[in-house]
Length: 119
Image (cartoon, rainbow, N blue to C red; front, side, top):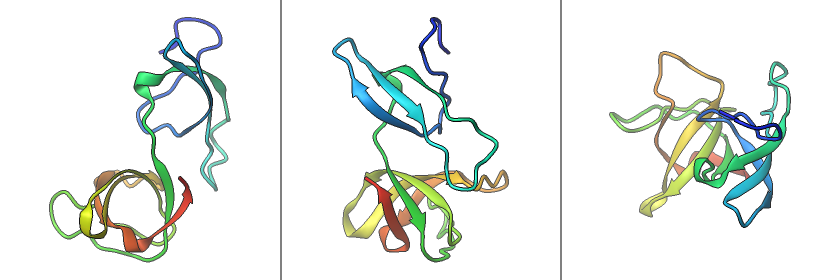
């Protein structure tokens, strides 16, 4: 939560594009509006670097069903924020859009079903 003007309000899962990293431990960023999301206004401001995590933004190119606990089922067109890469072609990611309340939002998935948009 911002406590001064000029700070950006973010919640877990908010995508931001960092344009400046300051020596005092804060970054200047703007929110990213995923394609098709017309309900969310773009905003900008300062955010503590400690709450920002570097991710790669990907689009799912083919459906993939979850293979048990800890994996993420995907549908073609989903937007995924990838935060970790493992050996043997697997990555850890979080579904950005669309939200599916009845399904997990994060988990392991195969890299072969992703097209990298921003790295």
